[in-house]
Length: 355
Image 1 (cartoon, helix red, strand yellow):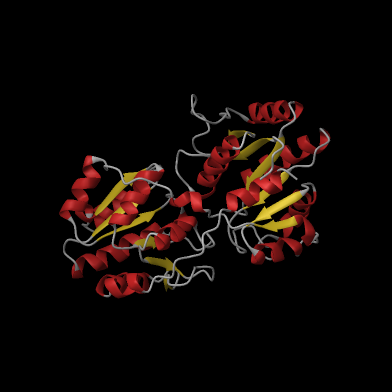
Image 2 (cartoon, rainbow, N blue to C red):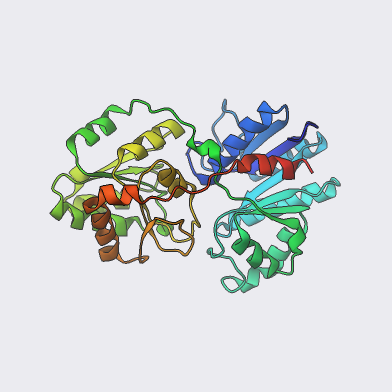
C-alpha cells in the first residue's frame, strides 16, 4: 500500500450509466479515499451534466480545459481514460496531456479494451499514427488491459517499460447484495421462463438487431422465453420498432440503467448472460457472470475467458443455437464453469498512480 497520500484527477465516463471502465473508476475512487488519498472524477461520459453527484460535471469544452488546468495547479496527477473507438476521446486526452506537460507533471493514461478497435491498431487508422504516438509518448505511464494490447502499443514505437498491463476487472466488482427489483422487472421474471440477460448501449457495435432476431427464433422453441436488456435506453427507438415488427414485445423488456446491486441480482437470476460486442476484449460483465456461476454466451473475439460459449460474430443462427445449447444443457454447463482468477487489480493501479 502506498502510505504517502496522493491526489489524482480521473478523467473518464462515470456512473450513471453503469458501464465497464466507469465502474472501475467508481471502485478505484472508493478504495483510494479509504486509504486516505484524494480522488476526484471529471466525468466526460453520458452523465456529465448531472450535478450533486460524486463527480465533477463538465458543461463545455472550455469548462473541461478550465477544470483540468485548475486541478493541475492544485497538484493533482492527471489520469486520463480512453479507447480506440472515440475521436472525442482523442481530443480530450490530447488537451489533458498538453495541460499536464505544460504544468510540469507527466500524466498517466489508461487505454481500455482489446487489441482491435475502430481506430486501433495502426492498420485500422494509419492516418492517426502521429496522434497515437503523441498520446502514448507524453504520459509517464500507460496502463492497458493485457499483454496483447501492450504489444500493439509498442508497435507505435513506444518503450514497453512504461506500459503496465493491469486487468480491468477486480474483485470489488463481485461485492453486492441481492436487492428487490423494479416491479416490472420482477413481474417479467415471474411470467417468463427461461429468462436470459444482456447489457448494451444502443450503438451499432452491440449488434442488437442480431440479438433481437435471435430472440424471435428462440421464442418459437420456448413460448415463455424472455430477454432482459439492461443499459441506457437512449437511442433504442429503432430496436423497439424491430421488436414490435417481429411480434415479440411480450418477450423483451428494456430494463434501463441498473445500479451495481440490481445488475448482479438480475444476472444471477438469469439462465445465462448474452454478450454481443466484438471489440470489448474480455468484458468485465463476462467475468462477473462466470464468477457467479452464470453461463455466458458471447461472440468469439479471441479474448473470451475459458468456459464461455462462443458464437460467430454477426451469425444470428449460431447465436440462437448456442443460447439453445446452454438452455438445454444448463446444469452441465454451470457445473463446468471455470471461475476466472480474480485479483485485486485496483491495488495494482493505486501503486502505479503513486509512483
